[in-house]
Image (cartoon, rainbow, N blue to C red; front, side, top):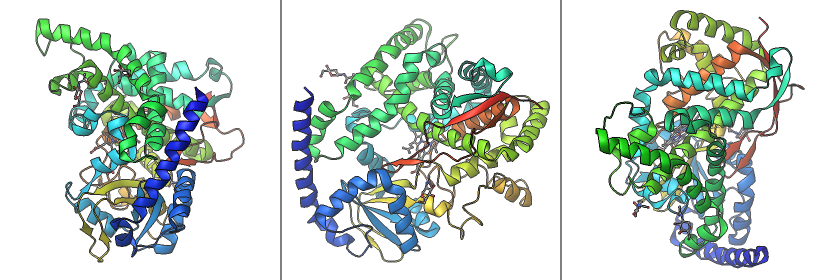
Length: 501
Ligand code: HEM
Ligand SMILES: *[C@@H]1O[C@H](CO)[C@@H](O)[C@H](O)[C@H]1NC(C)=O
Ligand SMILES: *[C@@H]1O[C@H](CO)[C@@H](O)[C@H](O)[C@H]1NC(C)=O
Ligand SMILES: CC(=O)N[C@H]1CO[C@H](CO)[C@@H](O)[C@@H]1O
């Protein structure tokens, strides 16, 4: 079986190379000649470099930024050249372009092969996006007690009891992922499903299924993609597993609706209910609702876990922040309780989380946009239809000209700016600008960022008010990269102990 797979894989890889070579001679290649390339422009060598990019995107993007800052550069990917912009001005031009010229949805479909991974329906109908942006955000205050309750229960389960009296080592990434998955799903599907270990395991690995699956599918020309999706990924199994978890819940809710009307008494106020309220007939099937819940988890879990894990590493590395953060949390909670309003008042905490995301965040590349038509930047750079644009977010966020002493972790950097400018909200974590693109920018900016910031701050407020934390050796864990994604060290351990003062 395995050797048959290997033969199929090698055969398909050769086809993929042939496809790449034929692409190289196409119109896009000539049209992009004016944009400087990182790595070789030789067709065969650049195909090999596309493999290197999979694990070294940080090096490629930083090199491009250092050499061509002020303009654009391109890097080789399997499906063609990816063009990066380097300045806030160019980012703003991307933001202003209409969706039918530069499309986030189509770029994401290209990168994640959504049709063959999350599902055709998810690509064709993005009805969950306005639900995340409005219903979820509007309900943050009323749902805060549930978020808080799940955070308490999850930390209690994940941090060993010995922490009451002594330092204990906790594997950070895996623990955080569990806590985030539980807390988010408390709001997505509710109790008791959000605590089901198999459901949690499914949702944390589904993201990897999609990312790895799409990377494999992307090696192949369009006509082979469905075959590659079926033979070389385990998405079908994962979706079936999701269906097994959600089918009884969806059926029970349908029954209640049928008997007592759409606003039946005791109707859960969660993502699944909002989706069922808005779904049209094709979206209301158990499979399509399941794909949608898995999609929301895909967008939420690894992103939030990455961001929180990096913030936790920064706290363990810079323990001098524990005291002032703890003081802020204690004071504000004394006045406003554990509420969404309290989270909004915690400016030092907000700044700390934002600074961490500025320096690390999701990766060196954000804001993918596929050109659906030819596009010309104001500096005259021509972008042919079919090209994918990206923002060199990592290098921009690390540029001293954009952020003074950009490479230093300055936890209260944004709180201090807000102090100077009074009540300004322009520097809070959820505010996107042409200089802060961790959540993207413009119409497609992350619709889940209000939920994410609220959840991550509630978690960090719980950590500083409950525990002392540190690293055993004080060494910052190293990030790795997969394609454009930044992956925090998932083996690093953080020491926890019940707060002593
Ligand atoms: C710290 C956590 C998160 C980060 C860093 C993050 C980052 C991003 C980024 C960079 C984008 C693309 C924006 C662009 O290119 O302009 C995006 C899109 C999106 N995010 Fe998030 N995200 C996070 C959490 C969440 C959560 C918790 C949810 C759901 C509850 C979510 C749902 C989405 C969705 C649905 C989109 C696609 C929007 C569209 O297609 O227009 N995200 N996110
Ligand atoms: C799900 O959505 C797709 C695409 O919109 C549709 O073709 C299909 O019939 C729907 N239902 C099921 C059960 O997959
Ligand atoms: C998984 O594959 C089987 C066999 O090809 C198919 O019958 C089933 O509908 C698939 N399930 C999903 C969720 O795509
Ligand atoms: C997420 C992020 O910004 N990662 C890195 C991008 O590249 C620079 C330079 O190589 C790194 O220092 C960042 O940590």
